[in-house]
Image (cartoon, rainbow over all chains, first blue to last red; front, top):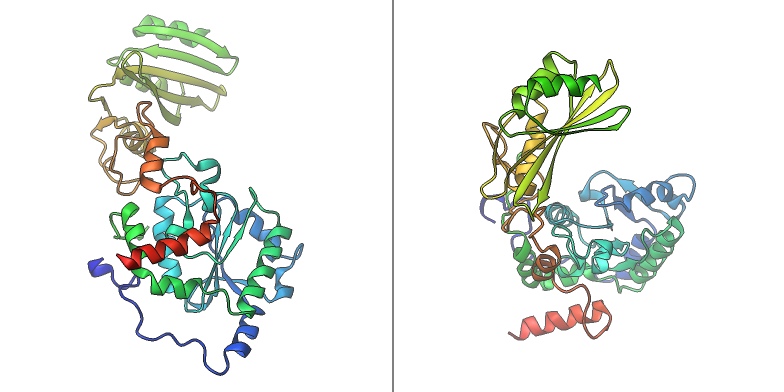
Length: 192
Length: 176
């Protein structure tokens, strides 16, 4: 990736600070304060507005939106992912601090959904990013999203939400898959 | 319709039709298209270019460019059409008449491969980054085949859970 090395993860981190004596306490706390990146990739982000505002009020479960990936724990892939968006999503995901979790919303990240024959939308998300919870539907209602987050909390509580660890362990495998569709890692210069 | 009669006197009109009360359609030759657009803009009050569109007539071997104009005072739309050859398609840009045409021409260049001579930004990527095939909106482009080759099968053939298959794929990859 050359000179853009600051944008993406270039090599595996030497040590992962996770575990230890306080792992259970930390996981218990983490599961109860999930901060979500306010980034919508597809049509599913429409459902996130009622989920996070007063109608369904996800904040009572300790979840809220944050504007920057550095402070966030959860990345929601809300709907179809185009090749162009995938590059940005990988960049956002690699900027998040571990432990981090990915929730995939809707049918499109699972198998392409109604865009399975599109020249532009990817078919299976888990070839490119590790996914912890899938929420099916086209699109899932806010109730389904909340149920999915309940499941994510259970997984974090029991220490099973280990997608971020898998990503680091198998970084080369993920990179190989990503390189198959992303030829050019250069990001355009957004100066307008 | 008054405007259609006027146009027939002045230009070579191949087809003309009154679609609705507020919409007319005019087909003209490649050569007469730009004079016709300028005439409509400067003399008849069709000031706004709503959009440019492209149709692929693969059986005839032609691309059809459609220019949609809008007259705000008469509240009337007019569609101006022309056909250009499908092999090495080439047409003149109209971005000096309407600056907003630059973006439409750029999109048509990306999606159909029509070369608009004189458009300064048409070779920049608009939607598709690193595109490596023929332009995707052409009718001879097989989008399902492209998707299968590039993004893989829609679902695993044996019907097992994807998550399990992924961990199997890690293991296979590590063994290599």
